[in-house]
Length: 146
Image (tube, rainbow, N blue to C red; front, side, top):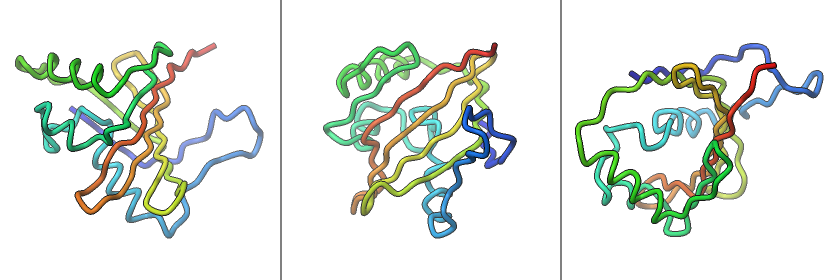
């Protein structure tokens, strides 16, 4: 089960008074991108290698929560392996979505993701194209609670 909320709970930012916000003019973009996150966990957008190829730019890469860099091919290989057998439904809860326009048709979406007891911050760079939304880059950073 995936639960997305656009909550604006108190920030745990180390910078007092810093609370990133989405510009109101990007509300429609935020809504579209929230519906696509967390990436690769939305069967309604596809579960085959061809689907994931369509979702990602040819130059896509990511940095996993471990800090390891993954090429598009490595990610596609892992997704193909993961979806080759029945997928057990995961409990995922995402919140604190923020969207920022980086350039024309390119947007940064950030959010927090809770997977069981594992919490991470996520960042995805998206490009709006004639064929639909494409993922340019993704990063997950584990949060440690002190």
